[in-house]
Amino acid sequence: MNQVEEVKGRLDIIDVVSSYINLNQVGGNFKAQCPFHNEKTPSFMVSREKQIWHCFGCGKGGDLISFVQEYEGVDFREALRMLAEKANVKLDNFSFEKKEDYSRLYEVNQEAAKFYQKILNQDDPISHKAVKYLQDSRKIKQGNIDKWQLGLSGESWDGLLRYLISEGYKEDDLFQVGLVVKRKDGSGYVDRFRKRLMFPIFDTQGRIVAFTSRTLSGIIYDEEEQGGKYMNSPQTTIYNKSKTLYGWHFAKDMVRKKKYLIVVEGNMDVIAAHQAETTNVVAVSGTALTIDHLKLIKRYSDNVILAFDSDQAGLLTSFRAFKNIRLGWEQDMNFKVLSLPAGKDPADVIKEDKSKWLAAIANSLPLVDYYQKKIMAAIDKNRADHKKIAAQKLLYVIKFLKSEVEQEHYLRKLSDELKISIETLKVEFDKVKTSESVPIYQETPVEIVAKKGNSVLLAEGLLAIAFFKTIYLEKMIEQIDPDALDESLRSLYSKLIIYYTKHHNLSDFTNHPELSEQEKEDWIRLAISGENNYAEVSEKDIANDWQNFVFRLKEEYLDAEKNKLIKDLQQAELSNDTEIQNQLAHKINLLNKELHKLQS
Image (tube, rainbow, N blue to C red; front, top):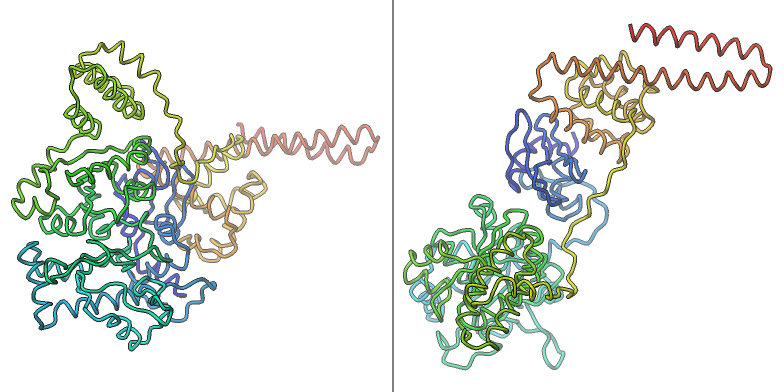
């Protein structure tokens, strides 16, 4: 057994796939809405028996490795590595194609986090004050300080640099992940972070990709803050803030369970929320919600609550995100806004009274309602110019709602608020232009499948049953010659006969090296189709379908062969070739007898 087979042998595809999406058991199979394209009716199927998956909507399919590749957006090598960790399989001698290896960059970040943690936990006055600030002022428990790997950067200009060099890392490793910056005179490097609380930032797999930090000026150090209240790692090879949500690796399972996500602005807000047992909370990292954030979120839930600070900066951040939020609307995502007391962030509210935080979540408003409430509070409803401005702002937002029912609802609500007739608002609404260029939010488009001929459908019907029940596979091998199948499936069937004759099962047919990519796709699609169509069908009905498919396939095949011979006979008659005519006439006669026998 090679290492790929060992990894697959130790894992169950149901466990792997269900760790990413919700699966519902239907008979012997599992079903879900496809995570790779937008759909309302579930067409994504997973077979435990065959350890394969297929979506009948977008046509994608494969084994557990290909699922992780698709879902995580990684190559075969990385997907295998991730699954090998789950399966506790060491890939010592596995040969990969040569590819950039970033493992050292993840390692140097992890070592830096340990360094910062060690400083925070050491026995000295500064460290004690930092811990006291976290535990007493921010009310963060020691268990969560450890869980989130919070740390402290020291006072030395090169303490981290010297430590990591002593551990065998190179200056360039540190520079690549943004842990050091070049000296102004170009003579070397110094630490990027000094005298700061350190928050590691994790990717979707829980690997440290960057750091964000908070100044301790005014808290521990009696000096002016250097570099701003918050300082983050720069964008690097392994860190893209537009694709990263702080706390996602801890939150994703609860997001799937609760069916909604709460997005906040601060790292401390996330930690406080998780400590308050609302673990479906994440933070953006110095950016508004992006297209990539929405793609990631939608795999787990369609519902998002925005819990930004109630100061002007927080509101502006949420509205800057509107261009991307409306793209979420186009994908049937729902957005609410969680209102907090003025000047308070989620961590403040949770620290004072956890119940107020929970109430704020429960009372969150749909985004348009929240936007309307804020605009109405800022205008004089007795002034025509204020009404005009309010209408312009809100009509533009309402225009992007996908549902006409929602549009009508908010138009009537606006009509009541402004005391303007619904007819007048609809006239203005029709004038609203939404021509601003919007980036396309769509994964690989679903291809339109060409209409299949009857011979293809019949062959697929037979193979689906044969893949579902080996008793019918044996009958098919005995009764159906490969030439009887449509040319598009003939090669797959021929290889299937050879494989089954040798192995007497199809348990690892997915990995058969003789299969082309198209043949592998057809096998997975038809195997899942067989289970989907016949898992809850009686043996009698399966037998009836089988006989019907066999009859129609043979009849069509014999008719096609007969028509070919008739054309050849006509050509022979034109050539006056009596011998050939007799041979062809004999063959046609035999085919007629077979057809008669079949139809009787």
